[in-house]
Amino acid sequence: MNAASPIAARRSGSLRGAVRVPGDKSISHRALIFGALAVGATRITGLLEGEDVIHTADAMRALGAAVERTGEGEWSVHGVGVAGFRQPRAVLDFGNSGTGCRLVMGAVAGCPVTATFDGDASLRKRPMRRILDPVELMGARAVSAADGGRLPITLAGARDPIPVIYRTPVASAQIKSAVLLAGLAAPGETTVIESEASRDHTERLLAHFGADVRVEAEGGGRRITLKGEPELHPAAVAVPADPSSAAFPMVAALIVPGAEVVLTDVMTNPLRTGLIATLREMGADIATLGRRSDGGEETADLRVRASALRGVEVPPERAPSMIDEYPVLAVAASFAEGTTVMRGLKELRVKESDRLAAVADGLRANGVDAEIDGDDLIVRGKGQPTGGGTVITHMDHRIAMAFLVMGLASAKPVGVDDVSFIATSFPGYVPMLRGLGGDLG
Ligand code: S3P
Image (cartoon, rainbow, N blue to C red; front, top):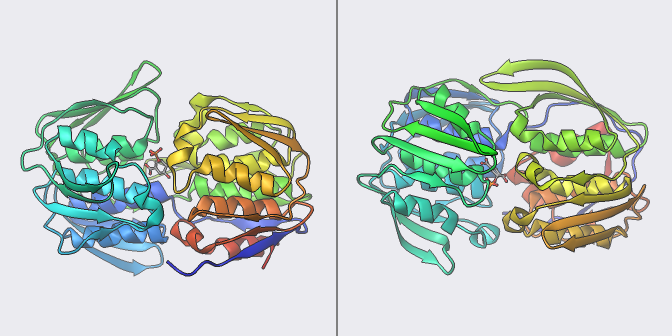
């Protein structure tokens, strides 16, 4: 990772233009991993070429797949087949990426190879027991792990993986995906039960690659059943624009007076659109211009106009559908009139940083009345924050991006101590905001 690189955002004239943000991060990781587990050549277009996804591409190569960049966002993957990974020669380094690391742990758990997983200082702090617990039930073994089940971890995959019925302890697509990936190599059916539905890109892509996956409603959540030992067939994947990245110019367009921005080709999978629903409840003018269906995912162009926002209460059950969007929602809330209460944010404490603390600190550093109450975040908006503070990003791309948005419309500039981690998920973020008319430097 590059040396820390500070920057500030200043009050800007109205933002204008159309933007296609980079490809969806969740789908990009999965397209590479499923391509590596299919026999034959998978072609991917629109892949997010951020550092997180590049680490996953490197891991797939280290595990025996042939992964090649053929053009901008265009990649081809020649896979090795289910359970076909070879023994990697070096440590698998996932950088800042929890998704890449946890999904590949699941895939390795079903193969008779031993691999060491590692990452940067942020990833080394994040909980990995949530993956080790289910994959150990399936026959894999953590040969070594740092204190608390953290990275670096050496995982010995199962020679004969055992199918399980696993109830995830938290609504996490990463845990669900790791179990399903390990279950690919197990005979019989592997089942994951989640009490609240998390993003379903793994289920959709598994079906797209030819696996037999059944999804049923159960309680308020879902039961997902995968038939093991399928032959995965290579499949073309067109990666739509990432709604979690579109969230930043979306909120920027809402808070900068006179702004009008169109975000094109944004994935509108209902398990990812909690932010749009919340912003609309706050009074946001977000119009859906056209809907398309591409490669099993719905997309739309979204026209966003500057809007007077009001505080709302965001229920805890909405969290899985907008888990990565709370930092920028908190920024939107600081421009609203009235109090926004965001409930049930426990999982935010174990993201790239403790996002609950990082967001509250960043808001307060910029004169916003913000409070953490248990697992809830309360922001008392007064129309326009003062700004003038410098935000500590704690190696977290979304903290950096969210507070740069704040600076575009706060009374005084907002500084962030380090924008280098933005490259993990959104290469070209600062030039994109400048292209819309944002004043950053
Ligand atoms: C992701 C799942 C979410 C999300 C992350 C991407 C995925 O994490 O925060 O950015 O691609 O599966 P959890 O499943 O752990 O909540």
